[in-house]
Length: 156
Image (cartoon, rainbow, N blue to C red; front, top):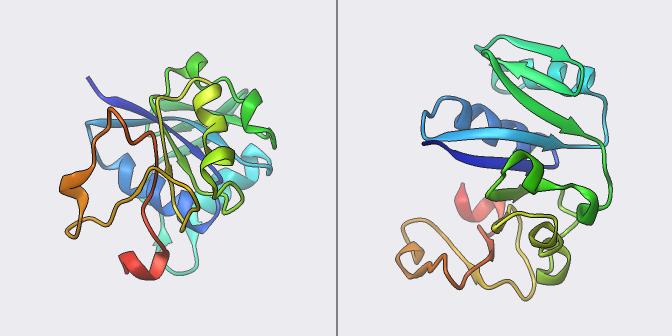
C-alpha cells in the first residue's frame, strides 16, 4: 500500500518533489496546498524553465488536479490548522512554503491530522535535521515528528 503524502507550498521545491514522487509506486501525493489557483498549479507543474516539460498528463478538475489518472486535492488555505490532512489520509506533510520553519509552526500540520512533517528548509527547534547519507540512520519516526532536511545547498 502506498504511503499518502501532502505538500504544503507548491513553489520550486514543492513542484520538483511532486515530479520525483509521481514516478514512485510506493508514494501517493494526495493533496497540495498553495495560495494559487489549480489552473496555475497545473501550468507550473507541466512547464518548468529549468527542467522542461513534465512527462505526465495533468488536468484541472473540480477540487483539484488529476495527474496521470490520480486525483490530487488542491486547497488554498493559509492557516495550516484548517487543512484537515486526515480527510485525505495524508500521513506525512512536506512543508515547502518556507514560512513554517519552527517546530511550533510546522507542528500545526500534526494538529490538522498529519502524523509527521518534513520541513524543506533549515528549521528551529525541530526534532531532528536529517541529511541523507550523513545521519539518516538516527531518524526515529516514533519520536521525530517534525524534521528538517536542511537547506537546498546542503542537499545539492
